[in-house]
Length: 145
Image (cartoon, rainbow, N blue to C red; front, side):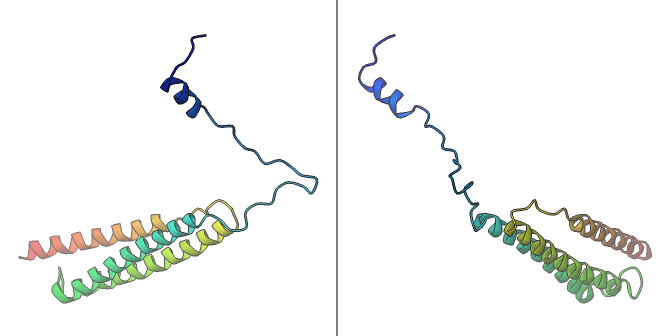
């Protein structure tokens, strides 16, 4: 085996793998789990709720803009119909985001897997439906001239 000198000797000594520590059962039983979950999970869950609320607010703003700037789209009540759809989509998005937040927070606190939620699929479908309705109304408006 070659003899290490100078810097090489210290580098191999400093960068060797450290032993891993494992929990050991005591006569009193296994170690107890931590009392609180990692707060980073709760903070990430809160950021997700804020993203849902941002989306809801954008839908509501779109609904208000429709009534203010395009009151007659395609037919006399076209703008208000789309506006009501956007406002309802904003409400559904905010409520779905809050419901998801509460369910995920409970799962995090109980150290359980996060529950599956179809909310994103439903909101996406609702927004897609509104986009199709808006597209039809715009086409009708353009054809009418």
